[in-house]
Image (cartoon, rainbow, N blue to C red; front, side, top):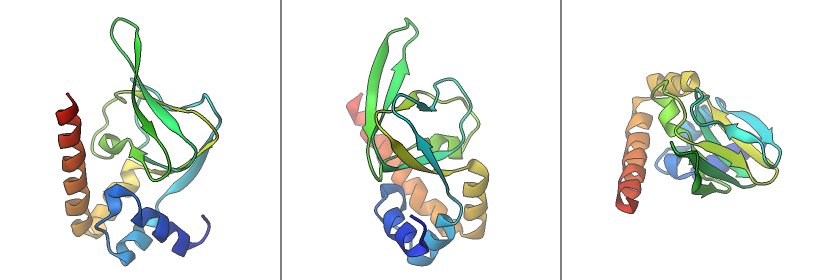
Length: 144
């Protein structure tokens, strides 16, 4: 996704950024780093510090929670345009689950530092993101 236009088009399909204007997507797009993961590789690890937000560009991954009794549960699966790690954009707490690549997986990664810088530049972005995070939280509560 080397071209800025492709990045903007891709980010516009990510639920977290659906309400963003094109100029906001361009500015935010320049803050992401690309990372690739081999099948079976941890993208993030439960209990470890977070690097920020991850968006799947290609491939698939699953979120795995290790319970206190040692048993494991798959709590979510991710494919292109799905994202995870949004809580790490706002705090420095450990990851609540591991996310493991199921196949060759390419991600865009946005660090907390870059995210907060973007919000300082354009506070309107914070409103859109908080609204999406609230919707996602409400959906998670309905499942419980």
